Amino acid sequence: MPNGSTTHEVLTAVFQVRHFPAIDTGQSGELRHGGGPGELAVLLWQRALDPQAGKWSLPGGLLREDEDLTTSARRQLAEKVDVREVSHLEQLSVFSDPDRVPGPRTIASTFLGLVPLPADPKVPADTAWHPVSSLPEMAFDHGTVVEHARTRLAAKLSYTNIAFGLAPEEFAMSTLREIYCAALGYQVDATNLARVLGRRGVLTPTGKTARSGRTGGRPAALYRFSDSCLRVTDEFAALRPPG
Image 1 (cartoon, one colour):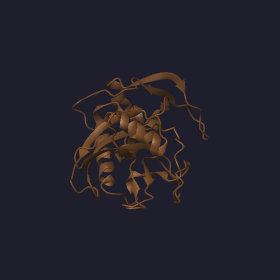
Image 2: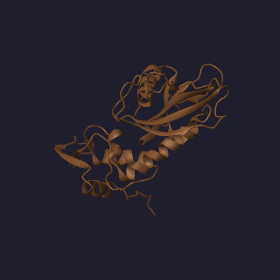
Image 3: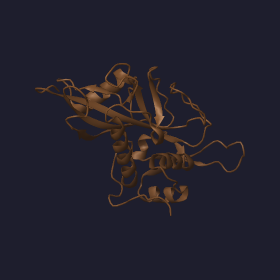
C-alpha cells in the first residue's frame, strides 16, 4: 500500500511436485511424464520489460488499498498466471531491504502456495514451472524468497500435515513417498513414513486399492489425508536425511 515514498507488493512462491523429462523442455511449462522421479517445482513468469527484462519472477504485484494480504495474493495468482485455486496458502515473511528493487522503496510480503500433484493449471505463455533444484536467473531477491519458502515447507513436513497440499485426494504410499522426497530433497523410507504418519493420525485408509502396474503384483492400498487444512501433528518432530 502506498505510504509516502514506500510501496507494498505481494509475492507468492507456488510449489508443485512435477515430472520433468530428462531433456530440456525450454519454456513451454507443459507437464510431460517419464523423465524421472517427481521434483519440487516453482511457478515463475518471465519479465518482458525493464527493470531486469528477461529474468524470471514470482507472481505478484502491488497491494491495493481495499484488500488484505491474502486476498491480494490470490488475486495476483489469478490475474498474473491464471492460477485460481491453491490447496494451501500461508504467509511467509516480509522482505524490506531498502535496495531490494530499483526505484521507490518497495516492501514485499511473501506467501507459500501449494498445488496438488494431479493438477495441471493452464498457465500463460510467459509462465512456466521450474525445478527448485535448478532455478533460472531470477529477478531482484525472488530467488531468496523461493529458498525461504522451500525451507519453510521442508520444516513443516516434519511437524504438520502440510503434505496434504501437494498430494492427490487419494494416493498410494509410493506416491506420498515421492512427494516427501521431492519436497525434502532427500530419500525417505515409505514404510517408516507410513508408520509415523499413521501414528500421528494424519492418514486414513480408503479401503480401496490402486490399479496393478505393468509388472502385476499386489495392488497398493490407497490412503487420503484425514484433514484438508493445516494442523500441527507433533511439534517436536523432525524428519532427517538418512545416514
